[in-house]
Image 1 (cartoon, rainbow, N blue to C red):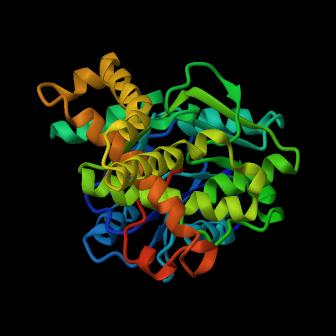
Image 2 (tube, rainbow, N blue to C red):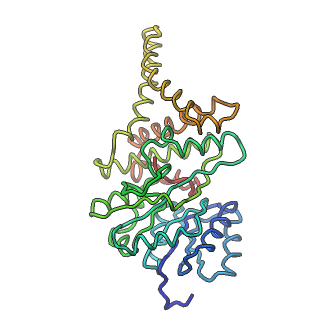
Image 3 (spheres, rainbow, N blue to C red):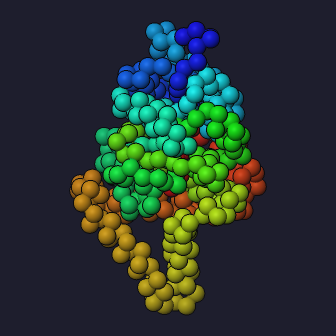
Length: 346
């Protein structure tokens, strides 16, 4: 691609230590029916073979470039990509994701209409070979797991509050000042919130599909959802109006469970445990959900284990953010030590 050519689309891919996934991600982008692209991989100082995989693709595709992200956090990666973007439109695709061949073409069609400030598709979680990973993926596609986050399960196009791995006009993003680099997570939701406040509409088109490698273990899921909770707390400080009742559901559950347990010890009676019955009913209803039950096979305990891990970790991260010092109410340095994957909000 010549330096004077301005491509229609810049794709930015934030990565760190994604050697197992980045090849498939780049393959899905290179197979797009829409060809006029600038592909920027923003690498957070990977220590595995991520760069080797990328360089092997660069040898055959001059559209691919690599930019180093010394801060190793997602908002910085996104802003580095925005600064270097040559395209009219910018699309974020994460290194542990693959997209369908017409993904970019559909996005360009929507954005060229001028009706929308941002466009996103359905985010489909993909598990691994273990039963635990399959239940996690199923929970991430269920209302019991993700509540009102429609981009996990929507069936019809709609104007929404937030889109996953969003696509936007480059000039709009630059006018908005880029992503907020004080946030450890939820930076994409915060950007969408500012765009909506400026009058822009966001389109969720379920015919555009993103296949996203989800957490494979309960431990990783717990870390992931703690980050989500911390990010949500930070965004709530910046934009209190962005917080909705559904966001506080996990916090209410955690406080209720902790309170009932403490009350049992203090009064030496079991009746405070009655306060836990609504949540137990929620977990039972989740297990009776067909896809969740089917994914657990002969390990029915995994459904409540996964849901509790998601909700309690999110709530704990949200509450901790109000007591921790640091940018956006969280410890930025601790976040840098974790990978750049799994950073979508609840």
